[in-house]
Image (cartoon, rainbow, N blue to C red; front, side, top):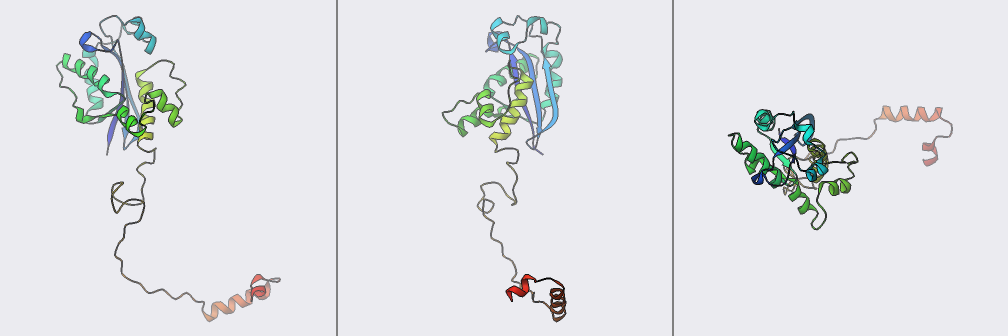
Length: 230
């Protein structure tokens, strides 16, 4: 079983080393590259003011987060949800910088890069020279993102999950009538050659009784095609 968590964050700014903090985490669970319906959305009090220019992007206000829990109160729920999974993130460097900064602040070990997959890198490799932001990829794959009036971590994770599946080749990318990995010499588009015992062709001519029954049937039909051909 392959378990992945498509993840996005919203923050107060661009750099945790300059005092910026996470204010929303959104997660969507995939098992074997398909959504399970399990999600996680956490709003977080950043313990600082949210700049107006950040609110203009994600719509999250100081008033909205003032009664939300701080990161130290929710990180265990987050860690439990993502435990053991690969994190699928668009522009992963940005989000992982914030997540590991917050985890370090509460004394938790960082999440290693071996557990992270960056869909931005996937998109740039698949479509070199083309726009690779989430909106552009939604347009490319015909994914409805009309509800995305603001950046929102959970909504963006849900959209990214669809984009990710398309980058993998669509929802049926793993469907194969052959065993083995895609691209294997004997598991590609042609059937792999196998040694099979030779079997003589089985007799298939009609018996005398079957021929007699067929002739009797023809006598009952009005101008049957078989008589015209005979």
